[in-house]
Length: 215
Image 1: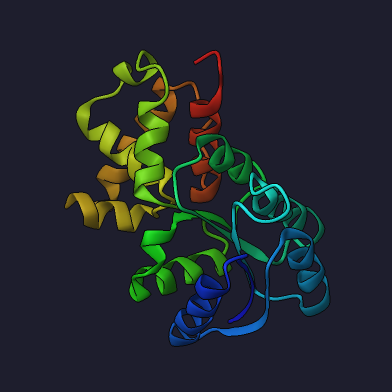
Image 2: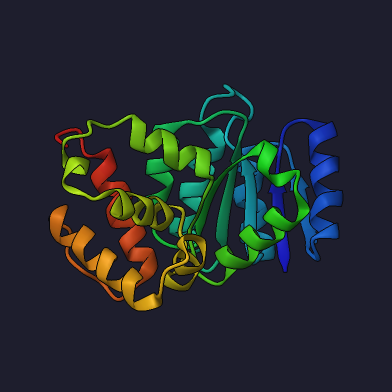
């Protein structure tokens, strides 16, 4: 798996290069800002770009803007955005670009197995959201639409928002695949979201609903 890495801190950048190598990746470029990241992706066409959210010159959303540009110009390159804190609007904007995107807290990537699993899922066209991000997205929205759901449906919906497949949801909740399908169908009906056979499109629908200022 070929990776372009963008992180302004030299110490963290070198640490991530080593961590990615341990995860079986080849880091083809390691840069310190968003513009350099876009240029590196254009040159190397990696499988995935890993970017910090806050980079020079303003240390606000350079990584996010670079991620959105990469997804628009090089849709075959997956994108994983890293952040020290939960930035709700950043997560929603990134997910709006489609499947093959992820948002993880930096603490999460310190765990090699979690990082390797996230990269594999992204390259396979999946969506990866840190559970803490999902939790805050849920808590940051008004609860009225969610009150239509049962407790089990809430659990299923949260796992959907993390980008989990039906099989993974079934394993996590110890229920059958058929039960998962029934819960998802019910969730989509109750939230007025059109059903889809594509797991990742369902995730985007969930996040779009969460980010709707009128919900």
